[in-house]
Length: 253
Image (cartoon, rainbow, N blue to C red; front, side, top):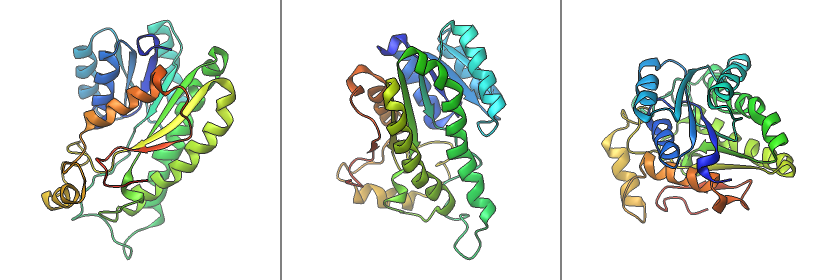
């Protein structure tokens, strides 16, 4: 299915990577649901800027009923089911090396919050769209990971552990859903320059990444969004269960 025929749910789409994902898909002609949790003004401003191909809808991805509700609202608005899901939402986390809890300070609640946002949130968004995808015989699911579980430049324990679990989640979903024409992939960009979550990252950390990376630069949110377009496009039709690291070669997997 061409991108211009797709309706795309992007979770956490009001800013940062999500905003670039929304812009990229709309530019290619897709319908886009700009999901947001708290950033109402930013989400609605982005939707207004992007025009009638974009719709801002509030839902906490951890709440199944709310996610199912916005999918139904979007179907009525666009008059077509959701064909593509990009699980991007990040719950209450900043990439701040100065305030990150160390191994002595971490609590289990820190981990469960990230598991709820990353795994539970992805499960809710997939299940909200799965029936229509199966009936349609087509679906594209793209999970946003990180290269930090392969190369922890900073030990962001709870965030990185949840994203590592997302690899297993991705591959199990790919195994089961392939029979319905649904692909499930993950793309991992590491620390990006710059998002709302990484604006507090110190310049020293970015310098470490730049000096260690073959391309000698930090990946941008737009460069990551380009890969999402590839996975969703006909060019990516034979790829599923993969974690594509998009970081300029810092991690070679």
